[in-house]
Each structure stands twice: as C-alpha cells, then as structure tokens.
Image (tube, rainbow, N blue to C red; front, side):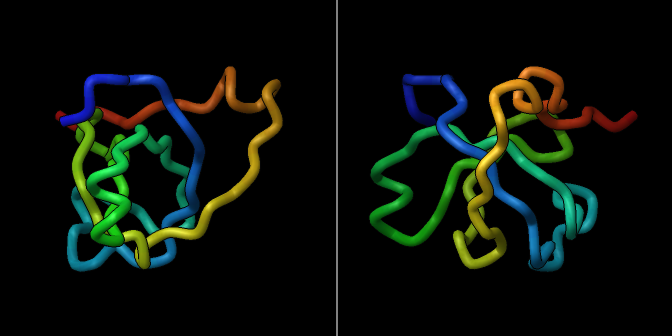
Length: 80
C-alpha cells in the first residue's frame, strides 16, 4: 500500500473484470498514487468497499474532473 493517501486522479470503469461487488461499469473512481503498481500496468483504486485495491489499468480510462466536481464525488461506497 502506498504511503501517500492523496487522490491523484479519477478514472471511469469500463470493465468490472468479474468483480461486480467491487467495481461498477460507467462509475467514476478515485485513484491513489502507486508508482510500483503503474510499472506493472495496475492502478490503485478506491473501490465499492471503500478500500483501495490494485486493478488492471485496462479496466479504466482516465478522466479529467473539474475541482468543483471533485469536492463532491464520493470516494468508494461501503456496502452492508
């Protein structure tokens, strides 16, 4: 797990990779910086559990989110 827990960017999920409880297609997710993961084509995403996990980068496309919108975007959704 990276030491820096600052959101570095946002991505749009285009493939749940068989993890429907953790990822939702067409949903925006926050990305945490993780250089080591990126070297292996993975990204660290705060998923539906509210925790950060590594997923293949090919499951997502990067998007630009205006600062005003980033303030109100939920970060993960803890399910009961």
